[in-house]
Length: 233
Image (cartoon, rainbow, N blue to C red; front, side, top):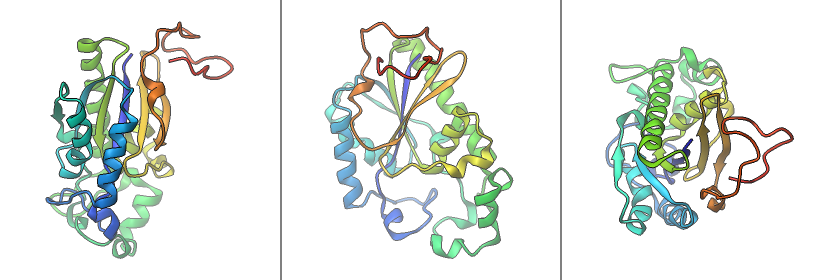
């Protein structure tokens, strides 16, 4: 069963300005985000990544640029299903302004009922469906091409990652706002025939422990370790 490293893009100019970027073109990493992207490549230096998949938006592609420069053997595959939520008429507006909209309360308390306004808007249910479908299909492809011990990476956006985590934890979408992922953080999920395992959430530190190990695992594949994780990968 491959291991998925879900990376949120580094801090963008829209993040630092408090703007809901959505699919607005030309939203780049800010100076801090560029440093986060460089640090990400260093954090992944010991991890043999087999496949890289990304949202097509510039801020995700820029986040992966230092990693891809350091790993010329890797190519970046783009998947629109990992792209940001289509926020419709909310796109490009200040978050402080949006907080006064009636829909904001629905997004916070009952997100499964939230549909963003305008012809370009989608529902958070649609977002969750496409995002989960994407990572599960890519995970199966990575296992077929690179084997069950492969590690692969997908770079996406905050709300997208939160819906994937909610699915992995078996949470109703209405609980996904309880999850938080920082810019350029890494969330680690391993899918198995029985259940997904959430191994890290919003991690900003050392990732070397996710390099495949030759040590014998403490429990059969797909089983939870009774007494807690031993740390053997």
